[in-house]
Image 1 (tube, rainbow, N blue to C red):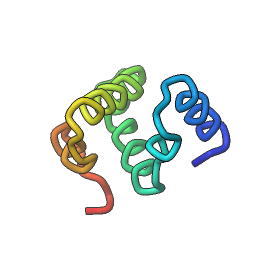
Image 2 (cartoon, rainbow, N blue to C red; image 1 turned 45 degrees about the vertical axis):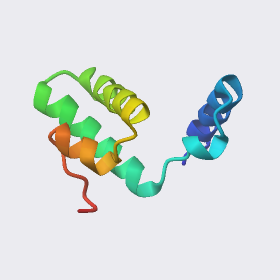
Image 3 (cartoon, helix red, strand yellow; image 1 turned 180 degrees about the vertical axis):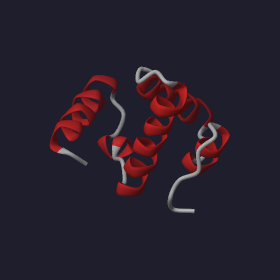
Length: 82
C-alpha cells in the first residue's frame, strides 16, 4: 500500500482498536477497488459516486463479512483476477 494509505490505516487501527493487519489491502484488492471506482465514476457520470460506491462496499463487507469478489459482482463489477 502507498505510504499515505498505510498511515491512514495505522491511525484508524489506533483509534478503533482494530488490529493493523486487518486493515491491510493486497495489490489485487487495490486494483479491484480502483477499477470499481473507475466504473462508478464513468458509467454514472458523477465522479463522486466512486468513493461513495467503495464506501458502501466497505460497509457491506464489514457488516456481512462477504468476500470482496462476491461484493464486486453484486455491485456489477468483476475483478480482473477472475
